[in-house]
Amino acid sequence: MLKYNLVAAGFTVQEAGDGAAGLRTARTSSPDLILLDLMLPGMSGLDFCRAVRKTSRVPIIMLTAKDTEVDKIVGLELGADDYITKPFSVREVVARVNSVLRRADADLGQPRSLPERDSMGPFTIDRAARRVFLGDREVKLTAKEFNLLSHLIAQSGRVQTRDALLERVWGPEFTGDRKTVDVHIRWLREKFAGKAPFAIVTLRGVGYRLDRLGSR
Image 1 (cartoon, rainbow, N blue to C red):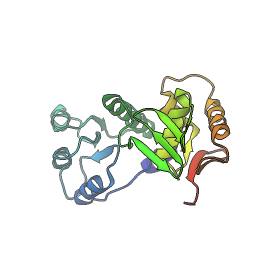
Image 2 (cartoon, rainbow, N blue to C red):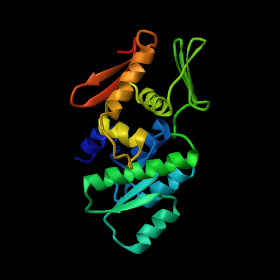
Image 3 (spheres, rainbow, N blue to C red):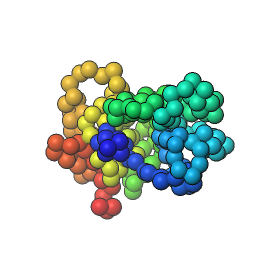
Image 4 (cartoon, rainbow, N blue to C red):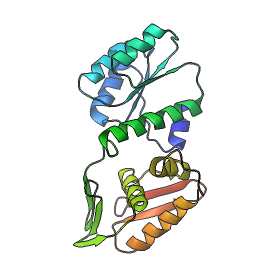
């Protein structure tokens, strides 16, 4: 249920059955965030957190059935970014994940784990300079168009729901028309129609997916 709702919110989820598998996944997949059950098999959750912190600053949210102040303090002192006490609602977990990711992005000044440049044939997006090129020609984008395109490219091949895009690009405080996503998608399509090596696909009733042409 938790994985299903995180995927529905636009996240890609990898699961690990025990501590050793979790450490391997953390080291090879470079996740944006770790949801850590302190009662995971094969290793103490606190030992897992300590091991991850030796090599990575990836955000960690602890899931714990231990509602004692000592456990929470120890986890936070070991480097966890937040904790959620069981039983919890799925909506609370999704909200906490979004909150921790926003804090991490703000600390870095740009979305974490995204390369400064991404190229596909004649297309290049320079995230550091916030510029987009088709060959030698620069394509002018508004701030929101750039952020939306950058996110779609980073998540290419993966479905992004409208709500997930609003949360990621416009922020949780956005209270305007949800169709603003559709409008910005249309503008991006108009600017790159027939020129860029990607297509933004509409999945009716679900959201959008950016496909790199030739990779489908």
